[in-house]
Image (cartoon, rainbow, N blue to C red; front, side, top):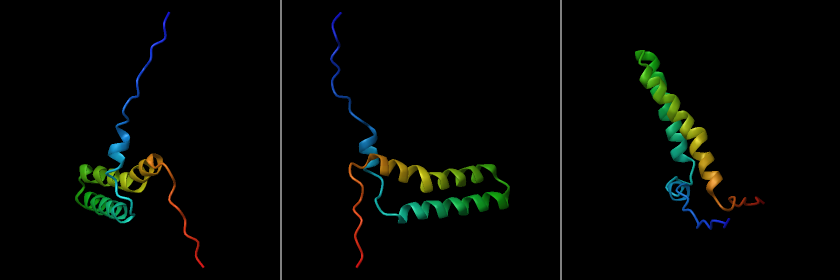
Length: 82
């Protein structure tokens, strides 16, 4: 029985994670838009808007920053304040 040699597989997550912004402003805006959509959905009794708001909040507050932190090679450096 011979061993199979498998070549390197391209990782599709790394190029997609490079598209994510490295500042907090877009994530905060996404969360605020999600809250606005959720409130609007509750006021108009539209479940679709409520669900879309919850999805935007979870993407902006948890999932996108998590993917960004997991795909970075080195953690960001912390500057010492004097």
